[in-house]
Length: 262
Image (cartoon, rainbow, N blue to C red; front, side):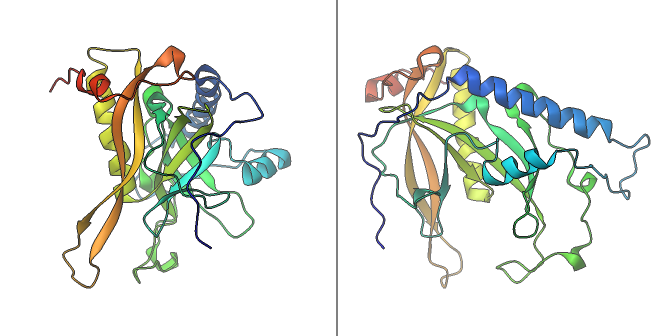
């Protein structure tokens, strides 16, 4: 079935949470993750000893984590194997003419391990701009590569993957989305956006970048692979942090006025 582009006019029946509410909830989760990791750190550093982090969730929390992961705000967006941005719940492709306010200071980073089918994923994540530091990979266990499943490239695949979650607010409807990625190209796209944000904060501390989800690419060195599509988060303007729910200024002049320091 051919996917349809997400319409420009779309109205949510429920009032979306404010950026402040989102940040408060994610901060609470991040502090819980840090406390859990700190409580289980070994007394003496020993890289050969795996860090065992117990699962202290209740049965209700496990169930809710499985059906509605708290780290995903709004609707989940992924960059598909076909090289398109699409919502995961219905596969609808998001056009490159839709403005999104990137709530970059609510970006979650960390490790995610997907278990057996039916089991909720194991997450060690926190807010990047709240000081969260990813724990060393070797502190999480599962280091025996002979026990890893074989990946698509024919080699053992690490069960823990480096994930980055970027919260987006659609400019015309205020609907919330989360662009989640674990690929190198996806993380690089978000990283480039965060560098832009960090530079602009030197002169304008109250603005979020306004972006459009576009598709770029490069010619793979292996001719059999050919052209490889990659996600691009193109900055087209800016929006005040305290008015993120209002229509953003995505004019060319707005973005060209940025004073970017190096």
